[in-house]
Image (cartoon, rainbow, N blue to C red; front, side, top):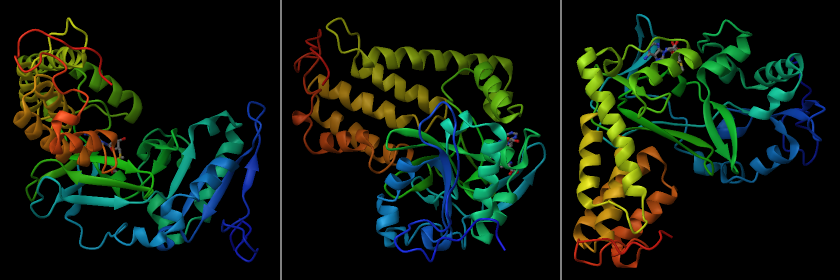
Length: 377
Ligand SMILES: C[S@@+](CC[C@H](N)C(=O)[O-])C[C@H]1O[C@@H](n2cnc3c(N)ncnc32)[C@H](O)[C@@H]1O
């Protein structure tokens, strides 16, 4: 018999159990555990948050129209096998060729926690988390407990902190747990990218370059455009491991070269973002940025680099190059930022009609000389 009290027989009550709550002096509304066992065809979910936020979530299409999740959480015949890597724990290895754009996961969270719930008394916060896990369907509970921890902390906290993803719902950042996706290890030059779709309440993972059978499927946990030292420090402090990926363990001369390319990438992005009359942005600068990202094998970042190139060409009135790069940007942005992302919509517009976009001839008329920039947007 579960410790949580079933609420399923109460009329018009949307949650499976009566929420258990604790208050904090810092907030008006208590934090509660809201459990929905039927979510995503019985995968279930619990949310540790405040009442208004939990109820607003119920208005998302994923809850109001469950049939849209028909093709989500399909874990049979995966394109990978689980493998034990010395020093890394488990990871996922491709068992067939995956092409850029191939979907690897589409998964709903089993739990979502509000970062502000840390303002609760720790024992109370943990009591809510334990209660939440206890209210998940047994299958999801098992997946939760099978996750790795590394902080040597409370077992529930540790699993959440080691495996969660930052997501945003209605503009508010939250932590979400996707047990199957949490099996992916980090690489500073990953071959897969992910994004969160809040309408679908689904986390997607796609290949961002071709992945061969036997190759580990990896994502990034951090901002890979930082130099090696910064990346290593971040991975150690947040995930407790010494980065051993090829970009971190290369010969110091190669690392130094990579770091200097990363600094150049930062500078070029600043240049291309400059829409003032003194801007030195040119299509050539954007081409160089693309080349540097390719050299660094930062495939996901190409989404933004292609956008810079599309806008740079558009700003000099060069229609066909603008369209070419806008198309490339749409393809990569859909994999890294999401199907509904604003950049995707903007670049799609440019593929149809660059003349109607804000950047058209913004910099130099069609001459390519000098800058008549004006302001972006
Ligand atoms: C989200 S889990 C990934 C799956 C995990 N390997 C497992 O066995 O469940 C994150 C943890 O995996 C390990 N890990 C992930 N990527 C790693 C890497 N590149 N090198 C070493 N350890 C890694 C770290 O212990 C990290 O805290």
